[in-house]
Length: 189
Image 1 (cartoon, rainbow, N blue to C red):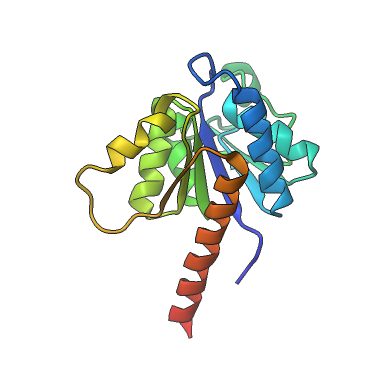
Image 2 (cartoon, rainbow, N blue to C red):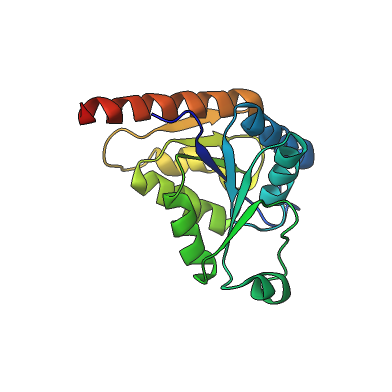
């Protein structure tokens, strides 16, 4: 079982509706993911994912961006998205909705910070795939609505962690990922 996990951070590309301390919170999440020796995966966009990636890179982590574009040229010119904080870019050519699914399926776990409809789409994708999800409550937007959405009709036990502290959220999510991986590896024996 590997000890280095891929953690998707999903959140608002525009942060005007997020909490006032969103920049600080995002960088703290990024730094903590790096300190926990995990790889960061984002939708290679602005706002929350970009701020998390900046904090992550400051701590020396390895960052993977999943672009909605088919090429670097389209990523920069058509979508007007950044490339500077990513070690690897995957150009999906799948636009935003397709990119969200491909990116979320590639992860071991997902963290939700603030967000709008795209973030909610990534949450629902992770939810349907039964991936461990950490929701950073108090950050605004979709993150503050997910508990109510997820408490409705559902099919079985879900791995959703609600937390208001960025460091605790990252640690709890990684613990859940390790436990799930351990259960999976027991099945193989």
